Structure formats: C-alpha cells, structure tokens
Length: 480
Image (cartoon, rainbow, N blue to C red; front, side, top):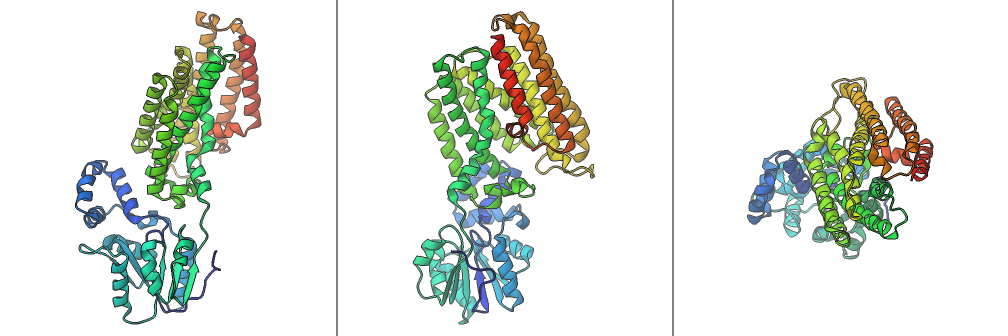
C-alpha cells in the first residue's frame, strides 16, 4: 500500500533511519566497495577488521573517507516529504547505525537534519540501543520514526507515528501495535523482475557466437553438435549474467552518473549490493554445474572468460584501449568455447577475423558513449579513460579494424584451407560486400549518434542488420 504524497505528520519531532530507509542501499557496504575499488589491498586487511568486530570495521572504513554522499541512491519520494515537513516546522533527526563520520557526511550533504544520532567507537546505534538514544534525545516529547527493518520494530512500536519503507514493510507492520499512526511508505518493486533485469538477458544474444564453430565446421546436421552448443549457450549465459551482476556492483558509482545505466537495479538501489553479489555467485555456480556436462576444455575456457571478465570490471575497463582489446578478446573466447564444446579446433582464420571484427564493434560502443560528450574536448567518460576529444581517432581505429576483418575474410577465401571446408568457396566472395556494407553503415550510425551503446543489441532490432545476416547465412549454406 502506498501512502499519498506528503502524508500528515502528527508530531513535531521525527527520527529517520539511513540504511535501507533514507537510502535503499547500505552505507557501510557502499563505503567498503568504494575502498576496495580504490585500494584493492583492502581485501587482504578485511579479515582482520572483521575478526575485531563490526564496530572496528565501521571505524576503519569510515576513516578511509572514501564514501561520497552524493553517490548514494536516495528515496526521492521520502526526501520530498521530509523537506515539506521540515518547512512546516518539524524537527528532523538522522538516527542511524552508520558510523558518526558517515552519518555526518550524509546529513551535511542533504541539509535536512537538525541533529544526528549515530554509532561511535563504543556503541552500534541499532535496535534497543537506538531506542534508548532516541528516548533520551526526545526528552518525553512525542516523536515519529521512519525505519525499514525488523530490528526497528521496538522503535516503531514506541513511536507516536511510524513510517515503514522497504520490501519487508508489510511484515513489520503486522508486528506493530501502539503507534497512533502507522504508514507504509512507497511501493516495493517487483523483486523477480529486478533480478531478471540484473541478469541482462538481452546480452545473451552475444552467446550465439558459440554456434559459429558448428556452422564453420559444417556440423549443422549433427544433432549432437547442436545439443552440445545449446548446453554451452546455457552455461555461458549463466556465467555471463553472473559477471554482469558483479560488474554492476563494482561499477555502481560510475553507473549512477550515467544517463542510462543509472536505472540498473544495483545503481538504482532496487537490489542491494550484497544481494547482487549473492545472486551473482549463485549464477556462476549454476553455470559451472551445467558446464560439467561438456568436455573439460569448455569448462577451462569458461573459467578463463570469467577471470578476464572480472579483471575487466576491476581494472582493465579503466585503462586506455586495453578495455577495447579485452572486450574483443572475450568475444573471441566465446568462439573458442563453442569449438571446445563440440571438440573441434577453431581455425586461425576464424580467430583472426573475430578479433578484428569485435575490436571494431567494441570501439563503436566507446564512440557512442563519447558522442554525448562532444562540445567539451576535456570531458571524461564516467569510469573510462577516454575524453570527448578522443572520438575522432577512435572512429578511425574502429573503422580500420572493421575493414581489416573484411580483408581477413577475403584472404581466407583465397587460401587453400577454404577448399577443405567448402565445395564452392568462391561464393563466399559475396560475403565481403555484405560485411563491408554492414560495418560501414554501423560506423556512420555511430558517427551520427544514432547507435545504441551496444552494437549487437542495436543489430538485433535493426531491419537492415537482419537482412544482411540472413543473406550471409544463405551465402554460407550455398557455398557448403
């Protein structure tokens, strides 16, 4: 049940929780994530902090001073009402289990609170400890409380007005008795849909590359090869979705500054960082379980793909041009994985073509991101090492890589190796104008700013790309 905008506030004193309430995220987890991203060596020190207790962990993370309050997602509807109530004369107090340094930074950023109650070096301000602090601060005055968790039940029960947020709001309300007013604040997003979005199923289109070796080795008529490639597709899609979820966690701060990626579940706060990590590990485990039905070589390539993907998310995506080379490499790994799944060897020609072709597509993705920054040559793409002034040279490199991929195809057609695979390899020459047309058109679209950030997803909804794909398949089948 959602309350109307600006519900009545029957008290003049309101205490507001932070983690899970004012923000759907957790400031400690967000701070720790920012610290690990800035100083990866933190992972080695983390076990020692945990052994010494949660208070010590909070203090160490807060001391690093890495959290920027404007990086946190906030419940905008709640903020609107808090501003309205404060303008009406209500006293607002931020009451949180977060470390006092973190709480003060958030309060200063929002400019809404008259005072702050928070954890210090001796006490975690949660549950009954928070209730005692609130009772002391209120001094007998009637007060309201905004919370989100079961641990907040004693405070909500003691308050004269209770506002509840978060996915467990209905459960918490049923456990309350006593407050003069109990409201469930906001609507809970459909969790299943948010987890589905986190998996990015549209990106599974890329995993169709696993079927390329089936086509290239002329095993289309072998049901066993098709079946193996299908199992590989499922395994790879699960692993890829797990790596996407981890990437969203590691890149959450940059995503929140992006006009499109800010809507992703982790960046928007509809799925917490910890829940996203747990879900990612579940997907990765399921992916390797499915891979167990295929040859060991496939599982090895799958592991390499996951390792490269994580390294990309942690480091490589922020390094000039190395990010593009890595993206091209993970596409090539899909082709190699498909070959391992059906126990054939991917040819030199196929791998060389794939490397240049997907390097070109990776560069179109970077150029589409930079296109929005044109007009300021020094503007930097969020989370990347590129400036708007780099657009022209990246377009040149990308278009050249695309043309080189066509050249590799042409050289393969004239190589005696093609005669061992195709009965009429000369027909493959028809592929070169089709491919040259599609690459050139894609780069023109990118130059005009008409290309979505992922060229393969663009191709999936582009009529001309479908025509080129179907004609190309017809040419390959005719050449067999």
